[in-house]
Image (cartoon, rainbow, N blue to C red; front, side, top):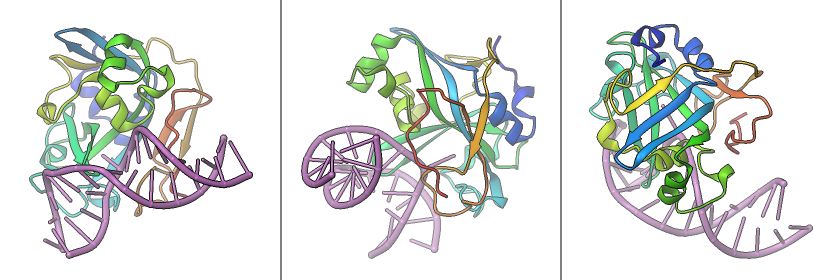
Length: 194
DNA sequence: GACCAGATTGTCT
DNA sequence: GACAATCTGGTCA
């Protein structure tokens, strides 16, 4: 079942938690590529110093201020893209960063996109999974409740969720807004900020 | 396995 | 003009 827009209108921290175990799927011309979400981070709009949106709306982060259930794809570090899911209603810039996946389908396509073959190395990081699934900045603002890029409800919820502070940020490090599946080998190696 | 530097460009001050 | 929600490949152990 594709997660409906109402799923993303729940409180953002709940969405981040509940996305664990769900399946992110990209229907490409070459075939489906999908993975199970094993790590997420919440970004809480104007209240959150680590969020792109804390200083208000700009051209870059405009999608975060829009409707829940859209994709926010941004470019960073001169060479990487990251994929987020927009939460909350229009005017409230909250989103969940997808940080890691466990590869399920289309693994040969992932290996080609990533130009590497280690299963453990295909999707264990936000920029890695974007590359593996073939997500591009053209998908910024795309609706993820229909179309080629969708998220499907978890079929298995028998895992423990762990939290930590977020990775790769210098502000807002006091919040424990990173969620990941305990003992899952596909979680990123990123070191929490605290 | 842990730690470190370099890559590389869009975006905001 | 500085820096970024990162990754990779190097060195050293």
